[in-house]
Length: 163
Image (tube, rainbow, N blue to C red; front, side):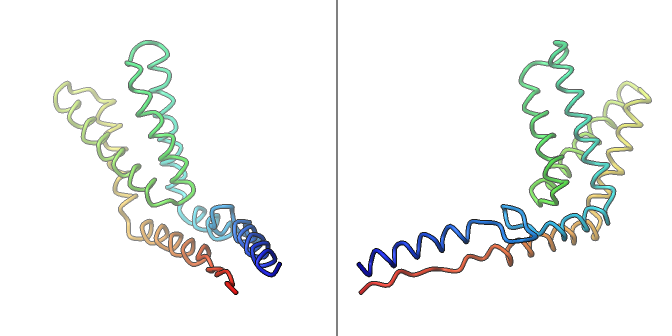
């Protein structure tokens, strides 16, 4: 009888740990902190919109049969990086950093070979976004968010009583 009461108590405690606390999302991130950080870094929102626009161009290119359907993988990665960057996730920062760097190199290479002005403009824009993403302030905000998530989501171990 006593063991059944302990099992029931453990299961209700585990259910409570899974529920988001007031002021935080289901994944443990603090709502107030994330929105403040995003407002203090407006460049992240601009880069996210840029990545979404690039994903849209790729999707339209696949729909118009200008690109092979395999390019939809790139569109999905750009959309994931854009959404994650708005949530201040480190993996999304790394994906966005890689995307804008590779696009900058590609566009500047296209300009050096074909001397097309739009490639130069897009390459320099990607370079500006890259330089913004590597700023210390941007990386520091991402670190603070990760640390807060770790602190707020540390589970308290519930040990069963064995009598």
